Image (cartoon, rainbow over all chains, first blue to last red; front, side, top):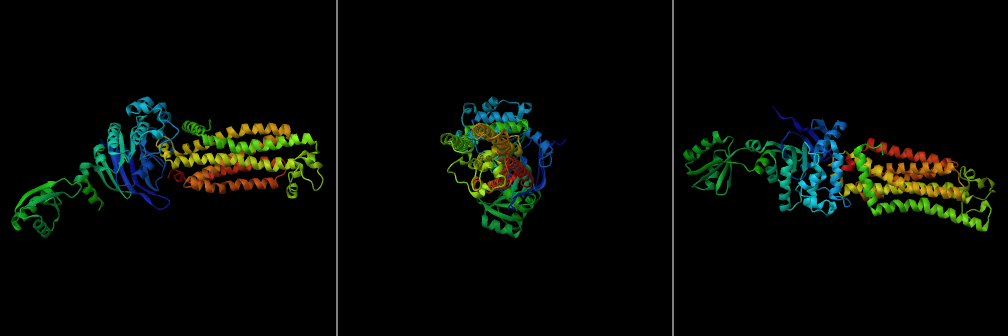
Length: 307
Length: 272
């Protein structure tokens, strides 16, 4: 039986007053318990999607369901379900006159006792913030500022956790440190991570929604996305790359040189691989000494899906 | 604060804490109304009182040396607003009446209008400019709660500072200028109406201005409307009733601005 869908974008368009399109007919669905990511370059619509989910932007077309509630059309129910959702915004500003402890206490109060399952003390301890309880928020290092935002999102043990570029702007060590906490935080709940960092996305998520220019370019598990792309064969011959490329072109294959061999696109490796090999060996009389399927790098897969 | 729901109350508490922790916000909350509601009027009335006792002049010589134009003396109802006015001869004017019924309403409107607008702008637009609004929006609240809490906090601070100052003012007015309870009552309505107008102006500015600089520069335009109303009321409404009429008009203006802002402008202007 299918798991319930907890975040559902249905043909969502967001047009800003200056006519910029933040999202264009974007549709995707995230099931309960999935660790999903919105992957895309800056300006691809990731933050727009988060802002629609947090209720600060209203879609100009389509609908957004969060935990089954229409974000724009059901304001009362939306207020209730927001208590089940934790959000970590992208590089938020900090209060100069509030301490980390005061901010967490505010977050706890807003989630109210009915939903809160951990205390501010526990949240601080969980994210290594205890010693900074009385530190003003602006005095925290960027890494600890992000931890604080994450702690505030986790105080209610939310069903859904939304993270908007949580490691953006951090140095590599701090980002790595924060990823450890993100991994723990995303476990056992539905999580949506917005990032432009593919390695981070692959490390933390099992489901990907690739955005570009506000449109969904690809959606699925990493394997599904790889399988959906044009497979390739790596071919090497004693006659060299130039001869190989020329012969492949004659046979109508799209190929390119790569590290002393040739990468050939074939619609189906199992079916077309042997045919290709026979043509090269028998018709072109080329001494092929290597022919093996290769996994496409994801950058290439995404580039293909974007074409 | 039962008008606010529990989430908004928590945010209101945060806003009040932040405002009271801000030395500059508190200073501007005290200095401007302090100067306009207490120091200016009390100083004028008390010095006049002692001068009157010392020289024992006739009532028509109140505020000796203060030039009151013939036009002011001819304003509708001017002669009915002060007991001594009826005794005035043609060509003379009642300077104390001029102060109490023409200058004082303007001072009250300015005091109750300017300070809340300035603190609200810093609170509303400052939150957006330093990006801490994103931190708030990530918490389980909606933008209505945030804006309502900020406006309520500013009104609370404004009333908490202006009303005690007005009590001092009222005591001096009643004992020195011998105004009646009606004058004090209607004046307090004027103050509350002006605070309401300032809330409306703050909301409109927060929803329309892209940044604090734009808000501050266009703030004059927003304040021009209540100030024009003040001028019209002072010129056209006779007697102490001008305080009540002006207070109610400003209250209606504030409510209208809030309603119009929420009806025709969206919070997206504030959050993006």
